[in-house]
Length: 271
Image 1 (spheres, rainbow, N blue to C red):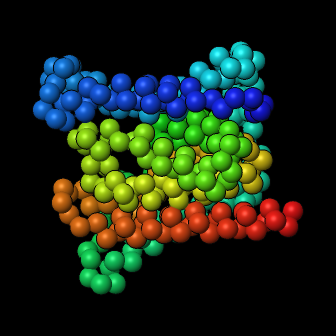
Image 2: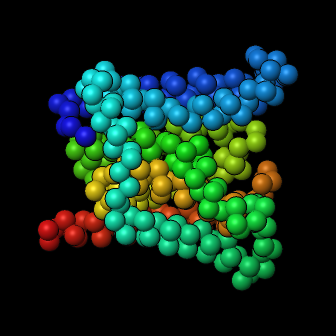
């Protein structure tokens, strides 16, 4: 991506407006207000939830088109086809994200917590489920977060602070989902969710860096992270329930992000 003279603050405005305005009717419905009507809402709730999740992509394409022109959009889309990540960007996310989620899922059994059943119908569903998560279940957010705004954030604030701030903004962007019935966020403490997004922000940035800043590496890593959640469930889907697995999971993710950034900082000192 070409360097820009001015920081693209418009990205955050478009991203938040797109997502929050689309999610707003669902938030109203969760509060007992239903501007769409019961029948229409039942039809539109899932499409609205999905469409709102493309806010980061909308922000990226808006800024590319308005700040850099049509060719920048074409170049960006063409770059999505480049899958030459290198073995680190392919393998390490599988081992790290799969290992940390599995550990958070299994560890509470040592002190008597009952096992949470896998939410996928079969383990064989997992490979195609990863693809669904990459395209529609969170991976698409990376078209904006890491695929577009990460470089300007790091140029402005540096890798440590830039990704910390981006992780906090990323958590706040999800805020309406905490008020929409049926989302996993309604069972999560927001403070823990912010630990998760900050840890992911640091780790995802490193994966993108070692991939040669290939945007599809971000989509793969984010989609993979979300795909592991129903394979190794860490959230009790009951309001008010204790969430020991969730806190282990987000704490591990935050520590993984910290270790990744320390490793990245040490490497940059000697390079």
